[in-house]
Length: 441
Image 1 (tube, rainbow, N blue to C red):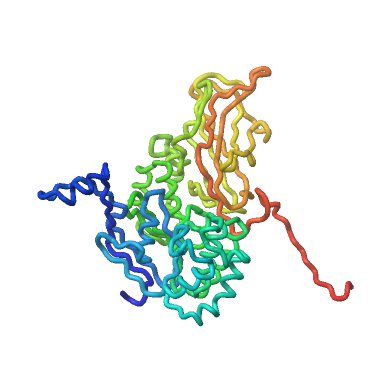
Image 2 (cartoon, rainbow, N blue to C red):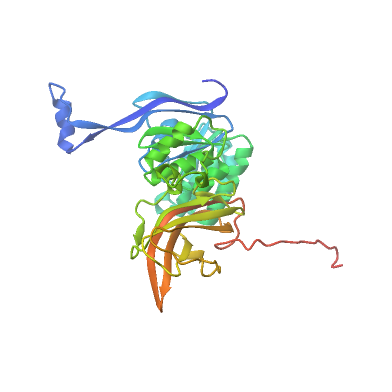
């Protein structure tokens, strides 16, 4: 393998034999005619990509896309059915909880056992032990069998070991999602340190904010197939389309993608397009196929979109930048005073922010059948980095009664990317001054 690459995955396929009944495995092994009683399941199907030395690469995809399988092949835990995965460097891997640990051994015994497996002498591990124990911070539990550990203590010890043995290549597979938020922050700070020191990192996570913040390149997989690789923002946009089942839109993106130099897929300006099938904003973002919607039918939110500060239609927004929520509403009956709204909620369903045209004092005219309103809400994103859900509606008051003409619950996701998160849900955007004085003068 050329010295430029730490990992070189070429045409890797991993096939599992699936049997309907346990007896079928025996029947197949004893069959004189070599009859097959199984069907082939392709966990990976001809996957190829390369990771340069010192590069941080993310692998993303839905559950069952083959992310963990390819990591296990890279680390030697699994053997590919065909193809090769060449590695140039010492690997330290943090795969799923329990991998590489003997549950009956104490924490200390597992540290030395794993160090020996990685090629370190006892003396070398003696030198590394204080840093490992300090990072793990599990106290006297390190002298107890790891089968007595909570999942949080387990991941603390496993990560402390993986990251303090000065690996040339660090492999991390979702394990950090188990630890508490403070330990996760500690781990990411340490990962950033070793990243700057030149360590190659390959990470699998469902945290798209971390993918965009830390990765130089992202590989996108789907159902064991290679989809694309490139800049993190672009790949996450494609991943959102897979989550939303928008495979036609994904195909268009792949056809348009001539290189990986940009962070976003080129978007057409919807204001220059007719409101036909090809001009719908919602086809350019990830939309929830299982959204809830209801109303009396007098209005229809037939199109909507999220637009970043650069005019791209996307579910990815940067904290601190302006963004616009756009809605297009067609009316099927006369409505005197329609109200247009949006709400942003967290994943637990708690409403975090939102507004409507009544609160904002917007001049809205009466409408009749066939009329279309185009509404835009422009504001600055001050929510913390994370995943959110967007809802919108067209409502009104008729006498004392609040009437819903059309409402879309959790219609689209919003991923906020942040380089600075403060405490709580949103950023107060404090301006901080600090003066150091000597002797109280």
